[in-house]
Image (cartoon, rainbow, N blue to C red; front, top):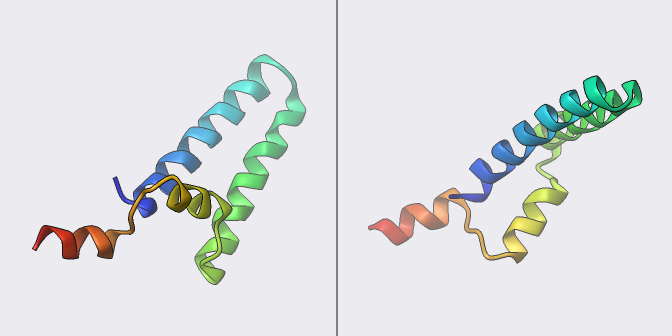
Length: 71
């Protein structure tokens, strides 16, 4: 799995988790959903994503690195 797909999967998981926590635990967990959405929005413009940095340190490779390794 590439970093780009990992970020998408992680963001999707966090949104689903925050919706479940909002429903079952406390309504203020909706702010987690807002934070994830805002982070995805700013990442689309700046390219900066803390989750991607962590995934890179854990050894995940970017799409283009995987594409050149497959040749």
